[in-house]
Image (cartoon, one colour):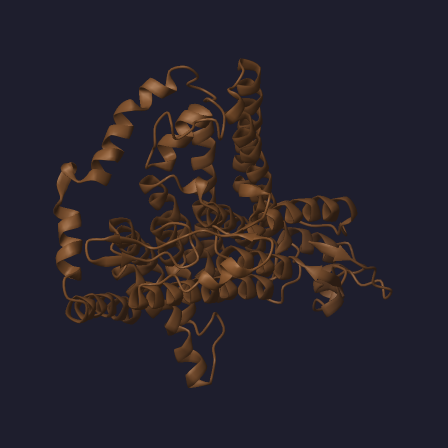
Length: 473
């Protein structure tokens, strides 16, 4: 998908593109990871986040591209993510309308409207990713950019842990910008956040992107490299992510790290499985030795039991869920209308159940399930080694991200929410590429249809001779 211009030679290939989806998504990743998520344009409050605004641009751009796109004859593809997304959007709108009809306190109308706009922004990210990535090469570029971006955020987190500073204070002096954040502490250690608003959002970045970073390192950035230095450089993001997870002073980050590694192991060769397990254990030992007290702190967090404050908060939230759900169990109270003054859920799945009801949280979960299935099926169906590898990595990344949503209200944080829809879009794009594209990146014809075309030629298939380049394109 892109803004197109006509080709004068009558080629059957898609028109050349002035602006590609890979370029637009790369800009989104820069804004999502590179700009502090608590930074907003002055006067716009929460809707002034650059990544949110760019998501709206993507939604409009996708709509514009659909109205004037080049439409060659293509194979119809099955994209379950699209149906799950449609169901989610419909329920969000129905729930929003029902909430307004019931009447809302004045201070809840604006958050509800903003929540719908956020959905439009996420919709733009998912649709451009799903429909816009046209070739294997573009997929590789986008995934490599994602890996590098997450690695840099992890590196910033390590620097914050060492210095005890955010290292982003210079942003405050920028004109027209609102920015306010500070690091928190747990015990004697600093809880880092990178460019994220909260350490838990940071955990989603470093562990959610770890599966793709691992597979990128094992395949030299999804393209075999002869230069040894370049090959080794792809292990830097992996190192930064694993070490920063171990230094995060967060149970959620450790759980995410374990899930990410376990989910990625089936995609690795036996040698890389041993290397990953041994390397992870070695990193944990080094952290325990170099950072005195870290091991004790983390063990205490996991052995604190149900009396530990955060664990107790999540347990109490589940107990009170039926109470808040009883007023509208099917479509909920409306996205964005459940204010912190009522209750604070440290569980996005529970919060979505209250705001969007059983139907809404089911549709939201269906996006993750459909994405994991699409990515896994693309890996099983494709003959392209890069698509196979990326498909397995995206499935693991989506699983890790979805699980971490159970530990905080993730949709209220721009990076974690953006990653959820971005991964879903990648999975849908992989499913389409595995069904409709050959290794050169151009649409291919299914074998039965190709046979019909050849048999329709004078003399049938034998007289037609071997397929030409023009026929294949």
